[in-house]
Amino acid sequence: MDKRIAVIEKDKCNPTGCGGYLCIRVSPGNRMGKEVFVIGPDGKAKVNEEVCTDAESVTVKKCPFGAIHMVNLPERLVEKPVHRFGSDGFILYSLPSPSFGCVTGILGVNGIGKSTAVKVLSRLIEPNLGSDGGFEGLLDYFRGSSAQLFFERLVKGQIRVSYKPQAVDIIPKQFSGSVRNLLERADERHALKDVCHALEISEILDNDIASLSGGELQRVAIAAASLKNASVYFFDEPTSFLDISQRIKASRFIRSLVNDDTAVMVVEHDLVILDYIADFVCVMYGEAGAYGIVSQSKPARNAVNSYLSGYLKEENMRFRNYEIKFSERAHESVLNRNPVVSWDGVVKRLGSFTLSAPSGSIPKGRVIGILGPNGIGKTTFVRMLAGVDAPDSGSISGNVKVAYKPQYLSFASDALVESYLKVDEVLSHRLNLAPLMKKKLNELSGGELQRVAIAHCLSRDADLYLLDEPSAYLDVEQRLVISKFLRERMESSGKTALVVEHDLVFIDYLSDGLIVFDGVPARSGVVSSTFSMEDGMNRFLGMLNITLRRDADSLRPRINKPDSRLDREQKDAGKLYYR
Ligand code: ADP
Ligand code: SF4
Image (cartoon, rainbow, N blue to C red):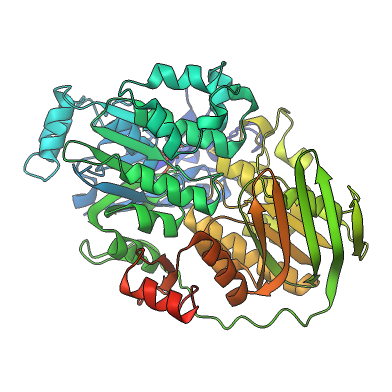
């Protein structure tokens, strides 16, 4: 028997925006005198699940913000929820279970309940088991499972949990003072010096929190969480704003926290990093905003491949009706296309930083990835291409108009998205912008803000679109949708996109060619010309001293274990980017 669940996503519900409780006005049930949709105490729509019938699928479609969900679930699945927000809110079924001595990853789309699950495990949310089971109720729930011991200890207060939240940008709003002040307060393990050394933040200890870049804040937040004396460490998206070498170092550091008495859990959308950091992964699936189910924990490689395939074998569950595929696409040579802009002998000094760009050009109608560490002069270079800054010497030819999406995003304005964003139908549809239009700019979540900023950049009239880390806060599926869209748009419009990215899966999927920045961050940067994917990756991976292989089943890129047979073979053959 199926059971119907009905959910209103309160974040999305906008009763004024829909012209005044459209659902109440159009619901077939309401029209027959039943109270299917009513006005809730918070002024948003409320749905009464018990009287909701299949006929309401009309109402679901009518809501302009996609705030109403109605799903039929097999009874066996819905017997025991772990937590439900209110009587018509999101439902979380089951929980990922941490294992001592291991790093367990959590993988799933945004809004599927990952943060909710992590908060329940951190005891920040008291699970109500759909009704009023309380925290002790969890014990019955997990009795007889491998997670029983963990939950027994958790309920008895024998497990201390330390948590790095997803949004590091809000730290400066909650804390003022120096990095040292913040970390000394957190330092229960008396390990400040070692942790700062491992995360390369020793030099910024006396800086004010308010002055840190996103990448610095991320590492400070990782340090703060790991300095606590805990038995379980949670990291919610620990690599946003970090460049690739920082991601790898942060991953090694996070792995080093594991021992027989500690467990680490990580939510991560960068699949190369998730694969690198996690021993086991739990996949979360369901319907974003409505309900989330957690799979058994599986070895990381299998879990990521199952996730991409949309089918969980052990659970016999198809949760997506298409497969996410990578291909060994032959990258067409981009080097012989007409350039949109070219440069020669460019040098620019900014304080003690020098950028040089010997000679090169960028081809039209393509997406070019930019690889390089933070602080190496990527923005400086593009500002020169855009004519905003002039080089000290050398020349740039091609008079290009540039539209730019910065790495860090924030809006102080409480204006509505629709007053800021004028986009065409296709863009709106592909980036799923309609549900965001009536929201206020300063109330968007990280992922929503990212989509709005990308759309804003692409809606402008320009020859060259520069997107700095468009993947931050987007989930795997959104990343792939955006890369596909970008490629199509550049190809059809004959325009060019430059994309600064640190997620290797994304860059592999997205780019037709690569520009690689080399040098020493904050001192000197050297810009390459546009390379083919293979040459660019070889050069870049050589700088990082890593090699990549394609997974035999999903064809996604994976980092080879240092000094493994493949790693050595590929280095010997000079083929760091696949064999
Ligand atoms: P994820 O971490 O996978 O992106 P979340 O756990 O943040 O997902 O959210 C899952 C769903 O639960 C979302 O639809 C969100 O709006 C809803 N939700 C989260 N917190 C609350 C809350 N305090 N009250 C009501 N709904 C909430
Ligand atoms: Fe309007 Fe949709 Fe909210 Fe109903 S659920 S009040 S239709 S925004």
